[in-house]
Length: 318
Image (cartoon, rainbow, N blue to C red; front, side, top):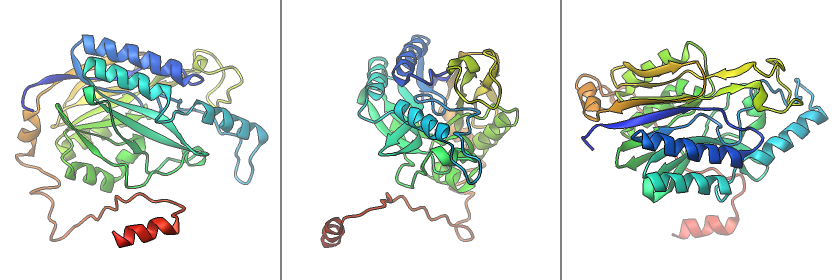
């Protein structure tokens, strides 16, 4: 891939109580971005299923209140499943537009929820997922922990695309693993709308000599029902997440954003040759790595809590 092309970060509010309606909204945004010429599109963290900003789920230390259990049950009911309607809708839109779509979701697997990113590779459709390895603070109560089996970089006609979610981006070893896979378009769906976020993304771009596409929701309190617990207040126009989405070049230049004004789609033109120009003097997992001093070992095996003995025996025999 050597020709330049357009990419997009979608800064839009989800519909937290209706994941199917959110998927339909995403479909409209995919088609809108495609009409503007975008070939790769990145949506925010937890876009499908919702990011419950300000909700404590009724769980002070040492306590679990009944209303918190009710809130979790409702939240679980809005989570998506890989065989669900939401995934089918996004897949169809990606195929119709022949676009690479990276979108955050809340994924249900049994009784556990995961903060997940889904990959859709144009006409090929669904291409894989990444489950957040390390939920932050109160997220650990409501989300499970991903393992090393879902850290792929996806080969697309527009280069190698990978995703790291929100504060996972502060994990140097995870970033190093992504760089080692040759990620060209480094996607960072997030819920972090602070002024400090874009400087962190500029560092990632410079460190990995890759394009960074970061997307955050612009979300108001009135996206939730009145009985939604929210530590940020109950005024309908209270902004829970203010966006800050951006697109950054391999040498740390901000090409689009950050935008804090509302829902929008940001665009930028990408030139794959800029990645190689950046690696001329710094290839963090190549000529700048010093493996004689530092080595990173990554366990990418799936970890299951229950492994039937017969499965173990078959694996050993094979």
